[in-house]
Image (cartoon, rainbow, N blue to C red; front, side, top):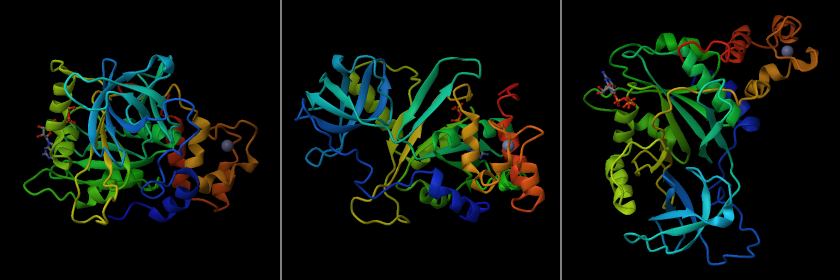
Length: 351
Ligand SMILES: Nc1nc2c(ncn2[C@@H]2O[C@H](COP(=O)(O)OP(=O)(O)OP(=O)(O)O)[C@@H](O)[C@H]2O)c(=O)[nH]1
Ligand SMILES: [Zn+2]
């Protein structure tokens, strides 16, 4: 599906969004390993009360899911969902087995949030993601543009490519919302759960990427994720089996590997992509966000900031961008959209 203003979007991809290299290209390079030469590489799928469910991604142990704890030597260093880690100890994955995470590889990206704008504690929700899927229902509940704007700011700040996922298209047209976001050049897909799903457009957007799904309660995120990853429930049941702990509501994100699909390039080993489901992400506090970085997602406007006063917020009377736009160098709708995003932190009532 064509994205909105996708030409413009292409331009900024080069500078701002990290392009994923090939199959093994995103793997952290092997560093000098003074200790734990026998450590295996894994990916953190979810976290539950100090226990990390990790997927071993070694050639000789493909797709083995194990439970691990943080080794004491990691100290206070956090381990989050999406982290690439080095693991030692009991890697059998058998019942009651517990391995140790001894190293966390450098992160390609970190998606953070604060509970609200005044919250001084920022939390990393997910490491090493490529894309932020902002799931919004077209009706029931009504779309909340302010919340979308906040998610967009968080995505731009984190260097993630935003993707608008508009659900419940059987209830309302996506056109008004698409018009509102057209100038931003955000990619989008439209879904509806009615009778036959057409999931190919969204699958094509997810292939080969790690995509974090966020959305307000009731927008249909769970319905969609279950459809995309039919093993979802079984996978989470498995986690409980392994840890031997009872069922409870987890607040951790959960990484799910997408199954192969016919429309994707089906070379063996092709990365089908990952969905990272995030229960409980209902607000997106932006306390940690440096709004000065948002303009980097607008290269057409960034080029016009030479006439700005020092430390210009780009939302003040002396900002040079008004003249830049008046001179015809950029679309006024783009400047309007940028300023709307820059003001999201002030307009937080109800979101
Ligand atoms: N009409 C319509 N209803 C849908 C669609 N997708 C989901 N729903 C319904 O919307 C309601 C909420 O869906 P969920 O998948 O539970 O939404 P959620 O975003 O996961 O919400 P929480 O579980 O509260 O976090 C359910 O009653 C779904 O059946 C759709 O495409 N069209
Ligand atoms: Zn300015």
